[in-house]
Image 1 (cartoon, rainbow, N blue to C red):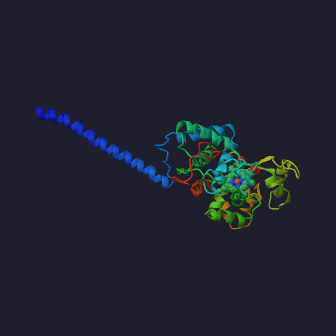
Image 2 (image 1 turned 90 degrees about the horizontal axis):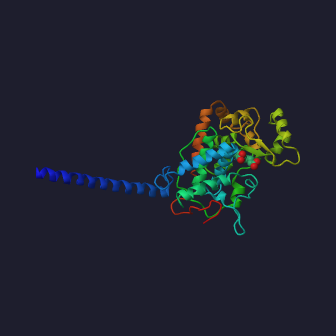
Amino acid sequence: MAGSSHQMVIFPDFKLKICLFLCLVGIVSALDITSSADSQLNPSFYGLKCPLALLTIKTLVTAAVLKEPRMGASLLRLHFHDCFVQGCDASVLLKDTATFKGEQNAFPNANSLRGFEVIENIKTKLEILCPGVVSCADILAVAARDSVVALGGLGWQVPLGRRDSTTASFSEANSDLPAPFLDLKALIAAFQKKGFTVEEMVALSGGHTIGRGRCVTFRSRIYNESNIDPTYANLMRANCPVTGGDDSLSPLDITSPDFFDSAYYRNLISRKGLFHSDQQLFSGGSTDSKVKDYATNPLLFRSDFAKAMLKMSNLSPLTGTQGQNRKVCSRVN
Ligand code: HEM
């Protein structure tokens, strides 16, 4: 009797020890997963470090898009313009100072990029929740995905653990961000330089199924080009005069400007691409067939776009001890 009561005391104690041991192993291996993620991106990077990070970003992005649908387009473009210059390192968010020249006044960005205050607002909230943990580069990548989803597109699992740069490149922003006046050959080259195939370039261009463009970026197309639907050209001219009105806006996708669908490609087939560069994808060249594929197979476009965005979000990230996690996205610590 005494023996069995002795066993009854020891046994739970033993179990507790095993349990403690397993818990320790669990914690150590979890730490190992997060520390090994320091050298490469990982979707669960913030799982232990800041469990509410992704939900916070999604909530604030969705609210911003509900308030103004165009914001979804602006946030998607912000991530693209970040990744094509120095990689996805939030370099695009650094503001010019007396001693620092960033990317925001480069030709493709000046008077054009928007959404900075949404990112900064998210950052402020995350600094309260988990100070110094979530990078601005990761916020940009997740906000782009959440924007596409908020406007009806397919999501992708964003790998995380990017760090923020302490530098930016005005000259690379000017040289590496594609201009709307480019021909197909130059568009292919611009994306090839970042490791994308022609097909991926066509899929990523579908980002123009949402958002707006300024008159100054498409004026020469609507007045001088022949590969354009005449009724469409007239309609666009009404809001974009030969002189003046440089900043007046028109939808990139005239059919459904705030919905992430494949109407962009159907517009190209009916010669209603807004930019010269858009219409280049369907102008008798090698990309015509892909445009037709996406125009007729919306599901294929949705999934190819998500895959290509995932690839874009992996462009040369800073990881581990490289760079820093900025406290405020617009300036280095
Ligand atoms: C293929 C080469 C590309 C060129 C030449 C190009 C050019 C442009 C231009 C000129 C604008 C209008 C800017 C303004 O008027 O202020 C614009 C807007 C936009 N671009 Fe692109 N872009 C390209 C690729 C992409 C990619 C890959 C994405 C995303 C995946 C993207 C997403 C957007 C979005 C969403 C807008 C609308 C932004 C807003 O309404 O605030 N673009 N693009």
